[in-house]
Length: 226
Length: 332
Image 1 (cartoon, rainbow over the protein chains, first blue to last red):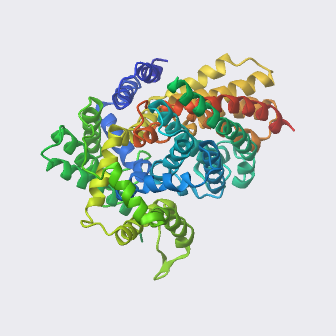
Image 2: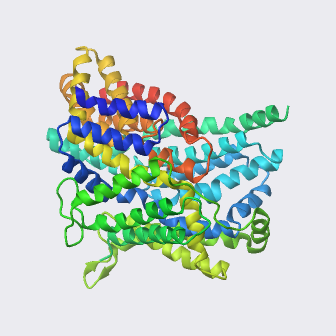
């Protein structure tokens, strides 16, 4: 029972808005000590945990390219392009991105989008450009909302797309875990098919919210000016 | 054979360049701690190649080096960044005005290097598995996407230099540093969370939660069992930041013994929908830092929880839809 204190520490730490790095480090050490793991083994775990999870930071590798392109006006060009396409509002643009992200991820092409590769350099500036075309300069709160929605469209798209793909981690985890634990013979394809209803539901729910985004942003700008 | 290790070394090299740049930047306000942080992170990416995996698999490269030393470095980095000794300083870059002028001048050529990244990634990860050199595959299996992204970035960098012709090509790394410094401590968090998951598992947190869930479960109620399974997946994912950690625990406690064995649910739809129910939890949690905290840092948002706040109104209705799916599909 007492090992659950580590979980409680995480919840409390995040709730009190301590720096997440410290929260995670302290919670990890505390629950390991309570679980009877020796200090040297804890250090070992931090080391091997870091080494084996290096792939999660791999997206940062694109930053020199994106930085270089930003220096020469990539974000500005994205805005200029959108300013010529009157039908493309921020909400519709993000809906289109959600659709593309989800479909490509469903075919296993998860590295097509992403916060570093697509959202910061192209998608967010385009969405903001579309709002600026309509309303002129945007207040900070509106910019924040656009950024948050651009990032969210990317995450929702990739999550509920990739799980329809046969060779993705979550599907393989299910089949390998239940097939070894319970002596089943589940086929990955058979499991992946059942992720499709949820994928469609996710697209409908999030897409509906994106279609209403333009109205919300307009209201925010209106309120700010009043 | 090109393996993921090569790409980790390239990324580590980029972190080291950033650290060294900061070390020589006299105007940087937090010069020493920032330089130490990025150099340590870069060196750790390299050192990680020589460390044994948590399961006991031998390290990808020889000789094997002690993991605890890397552990000390990781905790040191967490302290430097956690106590606020990293932070971004203004890196000299072009002004908004200059960028507008460049954008008008370079036009859509600017998109060419940007689109090179996904294009080459896909080509490499799909095609290179079939590429043989001396009868051996060019890419290691299982790391095709990762290697693809690395190769694509290097290709895009050359395309970028060709299209934009900067006077000093090294400016790419200064600009990369600008973005990396704006991410700051969030760059280390995803890996720290992976480690936390490992420690939780070793300390037996999962089995504890499993036994609690088993105790509160009323017997013979399909609706209750489904709701406990679904909410357990979502809540446990919120705490652990990862549906992968929640799935074995909740399935061992409820999914298999109660829903499949007692109530005769079909395994394929039950487990698939349970997993995506966990994903609803992922949308709501700062513990999934890579998806929910790194993008706001990268976009330089003021509210680092801003993205999560936008995702919750999608996650909650989707969770309810999933509960309905779980009540229907596995039982027809």
